[in-house]
Each structure stands twice: as C-alpha cells, then as structure tokens.
Image (tube, rainbow, N blue to C red):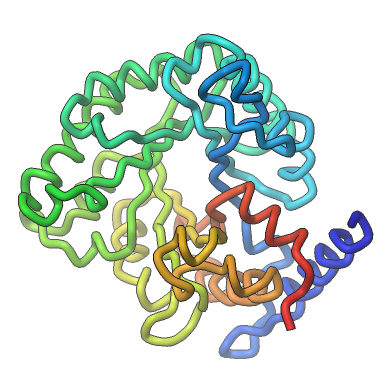
Amino acid sequence: MRRRVLAVLALAVALVTAVPTATGATPPDRPAVTAMWVWDNSVDRAVDARGTGYAPADPATLAAFVRDHGLTTVHVSAPWAADEGPVAGWLTDALAAVRAEGARVGVLGGDPPWLDQPALAVQWMRAATSGRTVDHVQLNVEPWTQPAWFTDRAGSVARWLALLDAVRAELPPGVGLGVDVPYWLAWEPWGAGTVADAALARADRVEVVAFVDHAHGDDGILALSADAVSATVAAGLPFTVGVETDSPQVAGGAQWTFGDDGVAALVTETALVDAALAGTPGYEGVAVQHYRTWRTLLEAPPTS
C-alpha cells in the first residue's frame, strides 16, 4: 500500500510540472492545490458523540499531509461546543500542528438553523476560537440547500447576509471571516449588484466554489467561476477556487466531482486552472473538498 501511495504521489508531482496551458505556458513551480477543507476528526464516537473516528485526521498525520502537499490554507471543522470534551483537545492540537507547518488555519462550520438564529453561529464561533490561535473563521452555511431558497429567495439571502454580519461583528481581534461562495451566486441579482457581491463585502477571504470535474469548456471550472472570480478581484480579497473529490452520489452527479475520475484527472485539471489564474490578484491556488475523500482518491488504484 505504501509503495502504491508513493507511486501515485510521484505521478501527481510529475503531472503538475508537465501539464501545459492552452497557450503552451508552463504552470508555476508550486502545487496547484494549496488549500483544503477538513470535515473529519480522529476522535472515537464512543467517547464523544461529535467524533467521526477518522484515524488519519489525528494531528500528526494531518500535519504531515499538509507538509507533504505544500498546503498553505486549511479549514478545520469545529463541532458545536468545541471548547468542551475530547473533541476540544483534538481541535486545539490539530490547529496547532497544521499551523506549525506554516499554513493558515481556520475553524470551519455551518448549520442550517443558524440562518434563523445567528446568535447560535456566534456562540459556535466563540467556542471554536476560544484559547486557540486561528487566522480565520470559515462559514459554510448554505441557504440554497434549504426549501425556503425556492419559496422565499429574498428572505433566504437576507438571513444569510445577516448571519455573516453577526459573526463578523463578534470575531476576535486579528481573526478574519472566510466565506464559501458558489460561482453561480455571481449570477443572482441582489440590490445594485449580486448575491456574491453582497457576501464578498462581508468577507476577508473567499473560497469560490466551482465543483466541476474539468477546467476548460463552457461548463468547465474556469468559465463557470469567471464572474465570481472577477467579483472577488474587484473586492480586493484573497481567494482560492474549490473543487470536489467526494463520490458522485454525495456530489449530486459525476460531473461535479473528481471522486470518480482518479487522482491523475484531479492533478491535470487543477494544474490547468492554476496556470490560467496565475497572476490574478488575490489568487492563492485551488482548494480541495475534502481531506478524507482526497486522501482516499490518492490511495486508490490508478483508473484506466
């Protein structure tokens, strides 16, 4: 197994440095993927109901993965009441271990009830940041997945923005607000601009979510994310472009994820995205959703 993983990693490195852009240019001499979401922890559910029991999420193994892949930004999931119980110790140690590798770290969270009760989000944030050194709080609240999005779009947007405002107003000094912004929010009108514009006005950093499994074409990552990227550049914010590695069942279809395409496709397509966006103000690389599924993809046999 170890030899197979090392072989896959060697292939990934070779592809990153060898894939040309559409204009024949060579991608930058750095990993295309520089960030990831971490939704799992290594705590046994038997000792803490919030545990997910994913052994490779132990702080040392997670930090080694960050180091080996040259990651510079990591969003680490913080459950409710993250200042209590066994998960609290794991979170403190995981954040410190990742930060020791030179990466920016953020606490990650987002529950639908927060949309109607922003005070809950503030309470979560305070517990997640308590006694820990973090660079940002990454909110992954998705009103577009709730029934109200289709019956009360304006109210859903207003509640989401109010939630962002509430959390931002209570952030500890020096901690920024990160927001996950799907590309298509740049096409949703809001006031004099778009929903994306309104979210960007409240953020300090952004993940432009473009869960597609190819870089080019009218339905590719670059084309779909172009308007959201332009809005982020105009807002003067640092950003990454997010891709998915979960199963097609979870992602909602094979076209939305690299989970069924193999690691070579992930590396090839993200290298194309990275080369095309290199030099764009604020661009910091590609982000992978998420640690467990990316690691699983790396350990899988190469696809034919």
